[in-house]
Image 1 (tube, rainbow over the protein chains, first blue to last red):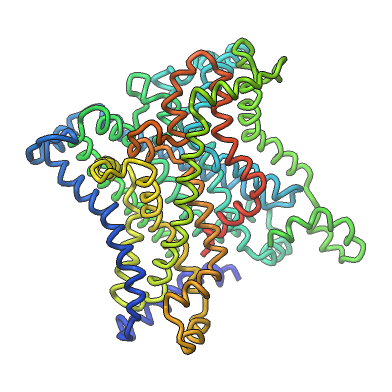
Image 2: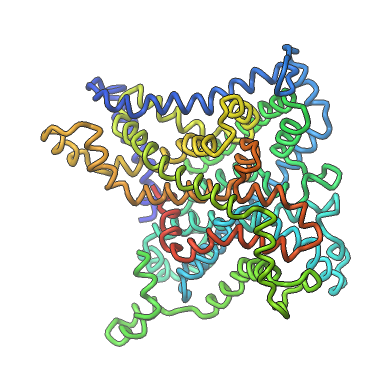
Length: 312
Length: 294
C-alpha cells in the first residue's frame, strides 16, 4: 500500500516521458487566442524581471553609483568582493543562520503537525492559532520582539541569575544571531506546519490500522510510515524554508539593523544598505550576481540530494 | 475532510453507543496531547497578548506582562497621528486589493494557456520561462528593479501593484497549472462546438471552475502585498505613498522612549489583517493547504 502511494509521482513521470517518446511535441494547431493570453505576459514578465537581472549583470562590471556617468572596469568589483571581509562575513553569517533556521523550522513544524494531526480537541482552532504568525508583517512583529529582547527578557535573566541572558542578546556580538533566528523560526514554522498537515492528510488511516495490528510502536510509526509517506512535502518545505532563510532581511532590519558592529549583516541587508544608501551601486550589483551564483549552487545541491533520496 | 475532523469531538459522544468499539476507540480525544498543544500555542499567544497590554499602558508601566492599571486608549490616537496611519492603511489597502484583483484577472489566463498547450514546444518553454523566476531570489534583482522603476516614474503605488502582479506570476502559474490540467478538456470541447471562442470559454467555464485555486492565489497574494516590507522600501520614494510596514520603519526611531505609543502603532499595523483572519481563518488555512497539494 505504502509503495503504491510513494510510487505515484514516479509513475506519472514515467507516463509523461513515455508520451514524449512517441512524438516529441505535438503538431496540432494552436488557437491564436492562447498566444494572446501568454505572450504579452511573457514580454511584461521579461521586462520587469529578466531585463533588470541582465541590467544588473552589466552594471556589476562598471563603477556606477546608480546615477550619473560610469565606465566599465572589468572584474574589479568581483576581485574587491573576494577581499572584502565585511562581504565574507555576511555570506558566512547568512549561510549559518539559514542552516539553523531551516533545521529548526522543519524539526519544530514536523513535531507540531504530527501533534495537530493527532486526536486532540479543538483541532481547527489550534491550527488557526499556529498559522497566525504567517499573517503578520515580519517587520512589525519584529519590533515587538525587539522590545521583548531589550527589556523583559534581560530582567528575567537577572531574576533567574542566568548570566548570558541578563544583558540584551541584541547588543552582544556573539549572541545577536539568536533573536534573528528565533524571529525567523517563530514566523516560518506557521507555513511549514500547514504544508506538513496537508501531507499528513494524504495518508490513509488504514495504513496506521494495519501497523497497529502488527504492533508497531509510535517511534517506528513515525519514522517507518509517516515520514517516508510525507517525503515530498519534506522536500518542498526544506527548499522553501532554505530559500526564505537565505534571503533574511526584515528580521535584521527590525531587530539589529546589522549590528552590533556589522555582526548580523546578511547578504540581502548588505546589498540593500550599500547599494541604495551607501553609494556602492555597481559593487553591490556585483555582490548580487555573486549571491545568485552561490544560491544557484545551493539549489543544485539540494536538488541532487532530494533526487538521490527519491531513488531510494 | 476538514468538516469531518471538526465534527468529531462533538459527535463522538453521541454516536458512541451505536458505533462499534473500534470506531469509538479511534475517535477518543487525547486530552494530554491537547494540553501539550495548548501550552505550545502560548508561544504564539503570549507575544500577541504582550503587544495588546503594552499598547494600553503608560510609559512607566511598560515592560511587564501585567494588565494595565489604567487603560490608555489615547495611545492609539497619538500613534495614529504620528505615523499618519489612515493614509498608510489606505495605501496598503489600495495596493493589496488592486494587486489581488489584477493578479486573479491576468495570471489565471496565462496559466490556462500554458497548462492547455504543454504538448507544444513553445508553451513548454514559456512554462519554464515563468517558473525559472521562482529560482531568481529577489535580492539578486532588487537594485536594478529599484533603478528601473525610478526611471519609469513607477516609484509609487502603481509601480508596486505592477510588481506584485508580475513577480507573483511564477509561483501562481506553478500552483494553478496542475489544477487546470485536472479540469477535463471535454467541458471546453462542448462549448467550442457551440462556437464559443477560447477567451469566452476561459471566462465562462474555466475561470469559475478555478475558484478554489483562485482563493489560494488571492490569499497568498494578499498576505504578501499587505505585509511586504522590502519592495515598498526600495520602490517608493515619496513619503505620502508609504504602506503600513514602511510607515512603521520610517517612524520606528521616533518612538525611542514612548514604548506604549510604539506598541499601539504596531497593534494598529497588525489589527486589520488579524481581524480579517479571525473571520476567515478556516478559509485562509484551507486555501494555503490547497496550494501545497497538487
